[in-house]
Length: 193
Image (cartoon, rainbow, N blue to C red; front, top):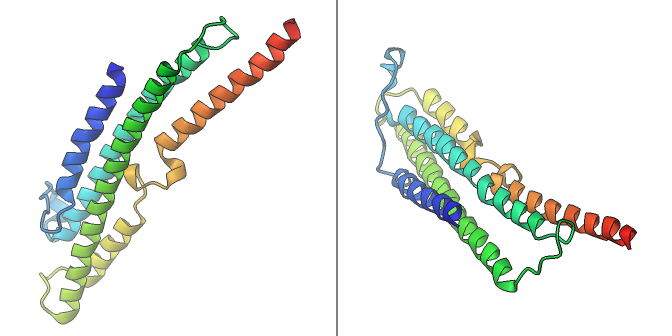
């Protein structure tokens, strides 16, 4: 149960950090290489924000696997294939509540990342509009548009499609484990009788 709480807390703290990036007026000034001196606008920094959020949420997302591995091992250990143990309903409820808590927290983290991405897109769209009206910061419109396009296409971490997220894979692995256990129990244990 401590592992579930650890993953839950890491996701909560990460969500708070990512939520900070979700404010349109918030632009973190990342250190740039000397070759990037001419592009000091918020476009470069917003791209770095999204890259940071993608990598951070990717790492946190991979932590979700550990509770699923534990639950898969607990399911296998409670199988009639190894021993005919009775599994109380309370235990199944505990597993379900723990995984649901992690699912809800990871969902909140994904929503915070999506808000941050939308804030970056909105800010860059305003910059493009300012460039077209002639009131821009001197940043080339083509550069800001290219950054905007890269942010829209970014698909790492929380920005990945649903089928590429670790929680989705964990649910499939858990269902597969339960299916394999049921098949083993039905074929092997019925063959012994």
